[in-house]
Image (cartoon, rainbow, N blue to C red; front, side, top):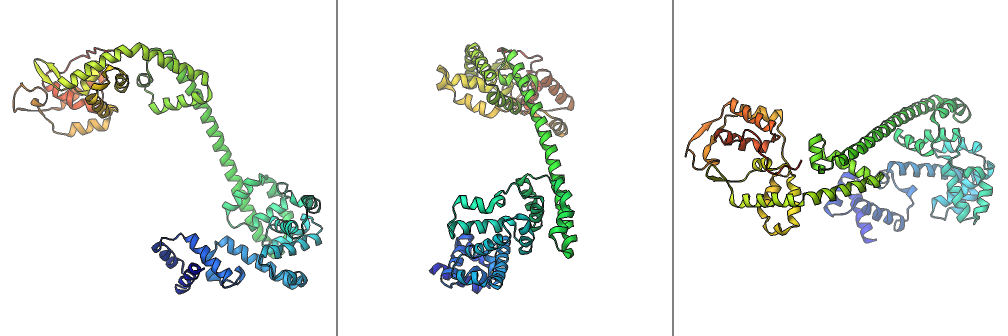
Amino acid sequence: MEKGQEYYNVCCLVNWNQEKIAKYTRSKHLGINTFKLKVLDYIKNILKKNVYEIPRNQMNFLFSSEKIKNIETYHKVLMEMIDKKPEIAKSLMEKDNIKTILGAYFMAFLTQADFKRVKIVAKCFSWDLSCEQVINDALQYALTELNYSKEDVEKIFGKLLVKRGSTANEILNQILLLESNEMINDYLSKIGYDAIYLKKNIPDFLVLFVPIEKREKARIKLEESLNTYIILTERKTKEEQKKENRYLKETEEYKKLILEYLETKDLSKEEFCSIKNISQSKFKAALLYVKASIPTLYELIEVHERELFQKRYSYYIEIASYIINALDNGIIENGVKRNFTILDYLLLTNANLKNVLDVAKNSPLKDYLSKFQVFVSRYKRLTPITDRFIRRIMLEKVYINIEEDIKASIPNMESIVTDDDKLMVLDYLKNNNLYYEECFDIALRRYKNKTLHQESTMRFKIH
């Protein structure tokens, strides 16, 4: 209790100011809920106060607004009980549990009402309590204090226990007790009651259960709440239908896509996506759908990929060997050695770069792949040329250092690049399926050096 007293004293020192208390808990690395529990424990067990004796400023810190309302509501009923049923109050006041005290009062009330819901709705409304709260407190009292069996409870409480079968009047009463549209919408969605039918019952409910002076205010709240719920429900239904239709359309497309892929027997997934201009993410989604929903079709994909791998294994090894040698020793062109580039690779083969590396990793070449792995890491995702990229390069003033590409050509000489040069290179890249930003600078230098091939001379063509 020492900590509880310390924390209680801190609260008193700052006059229960929530911001100052929060600052204190942060400085001590305390969780605010742990802090509150310690203070509340001290108030109840050392100061011997029940929650109804706690001042309002302390309540505001210790409890949520909903909890405070609940406490005040129960306290109002407790005061009524002491006034109207002093014999019950006298025998129970020594009990610390307010639920037990009020449970006895509610039990007496339900007994007087013959356990009929129609007779208790108005009274519960006057207490600002739902019928279910009153019934549940009485029920717990009957089970724990009166030692009723479940059979006794079912016999005595009867239809009061059927929550889902709540009458329209009970539901309308509950709506009036709830504070926000969010709470009302949540309540209505849980009970699954027809909101349009509830609207039709509003006039009768107001006449039977709401005092005249409160009817207009109650009517406005009920109608606005139910109209809001109906609109939200209709919107949700439409959205769910759209979502369902979209899902059905997508799944049909996924199935069609996979069947089309299987018909192209000599293409890998990446090659198929590239040729058909399909995003990798869409194809992956199609694969996941087929795997989960059509396993027999997914098995055909696995067979297809195994057969394709076996067909291409020796071809991939040959490509990998060429690249390893080119990266280590460079390429001889017009008697001059230069570095192997991504442009060289794309002119060499249309095989997927990562697939070639994966095959090489499981081959006798696995110990010679260090430079190849760096190359793949750098170029595994190429950036397609866009209009924005073209606008940028057309605005730039570019000079080419010829030495960068051909060492023995014309030393220390720079050559300005014209707009026509840039357009010629862009056309070349586009016509040869090399339309990537990473290829542009390389191709531009070669164009100025007159070493850019006018046609793609692909040595290892996969398809």
